[in-house]
Length: 459
Image 1 (cartoon, rainbow, N blue to C red):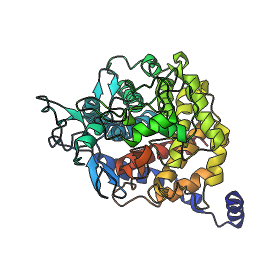
Image 2: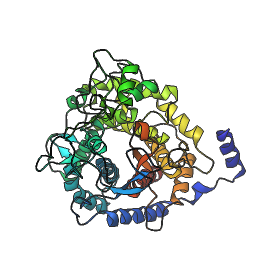
Image 3: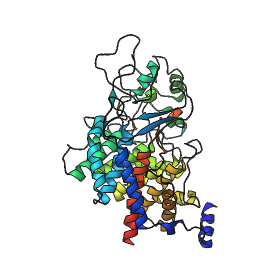
């Protein structure tokens, strides 16, 4: 029905948004965006609070939740915002190396990026002194550092220990992609990027555990796809959903496999999980670094992604990514990085995008996700359309222009776009604990404007 409406509006001459776009207009609004990103990049560190080289991000509690506190907004420093902004700007610069403003920002961001890295792995949060004592039985070891948010004051021992998360394949893939881009742009050898073998070490194969959320959303056992966390999960002699559910219901007891231990990196709920967006991000890294054909997890990741596409599970494909169109963005990005090396149902992604685009060009996620998360959904929709066009798919230019026009009209006076949900706490807090960043959304728009300009100049 929506597609018919678009055709009727076009025929009547009412859809004139795309006619307002010009290369000059794109350049002007892109420059405003770059100025915003340059001005908002932190110049001076405040100990354990904010850090030179990063861009602001925020944790939003949409409503009060047990153990997490009341509805509020908190400043946060995290790897995914850091790499999200960094990688979008790096890709924009590689496409147009005349944008020296971007190169300077990347140079300033690089030292801060490394603070999330240990050996070849990256963590979502950086190491900081704990907010409180973490064990009833013993004092915190002298000089102890843990993973935690910067400003969000977690109160109980339990929730502080739960925040001390293990290294994960998501941040590791995107962090190493940042290192790859930095080396490519600056010609500095920062050491060999993480090998595909590091991701193949944690596959959904021959496990004696399973995540309850994966069970409920009907992801099959033994997908051979990439797992999210780099660490040992709590295993059962014989797994069953009943056993796992009982352990999760008594998660506050030390005897539960879901209980976090003091001073030990934690895998949430004690069980590793499978996320299609995480798998797409890993494929993006492996494709960019020409390692994809070597990986054992590649086939399983493709099957998982296609499984979610064929089921139409656009909103549920990512456990940590509640925005419906983040899946389209992540998968189209992985296909672009790997070119023809990924066998994904691209046409179904394009068809869904065209089918769900509104008559003024915008896209909408679910109501619970930041009140449909319209702006962020539209940015993801636009970048997905541009990625598919770059892959050679027949994406109507007027559809791209329609969405671009909508977004250009929603740029703020300071050059930014309002940040939407780029990440969440996952599982039970998937629709409660959201991470947002104006810098992240604005950096994606800079990349989208570069891509739009490239296609327009070529025609």
